[in-house]
Every structure is written in structure tokens, then in C-alpha cells.
Image (cartoon, rainbow, N blue to C red; front, side, top):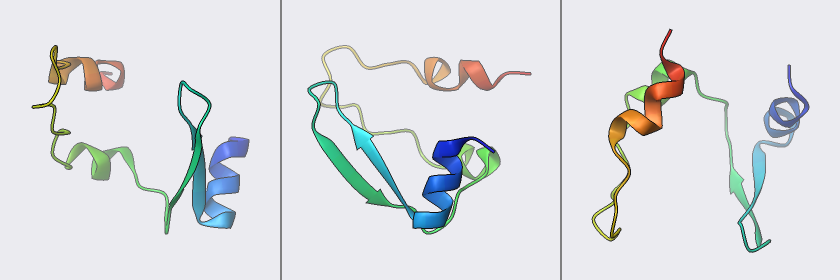
Length: 63
């Protein structure tokens, strides 16, 4: 198991850094499977000038 996964699972939180260097922490009660995540709705991109097509979000998951 990767160190970040192990840390998130044990601490039940994940710390993220933005491109500007701002750090934030989000609760992670449990790690989710890829199948669970794929059932989630796509993010709202209505505010973006150039929204990212859905296939770009999921292309790397293709077998």
C-alpha cells in the first residue's frame, strides 16, 4: 500500500496542496473503491470557460 493511502486510512483524513501552495485537509472516513467513485456524478463545471470532457476524467481507468 502506498504511503499516502496508509496515512489517509490511519488518520482518516487527507491533506492536499493547491498549485498556489495552500494546504487543506479533508476528512476521509474510509477509502473508496474505484467502482464507488465511478458511480459519483461528474463535477459541476458550469462555471468553467472550457469544461473538461468526461472521458478525460476517466480515460486513465480504461483496461
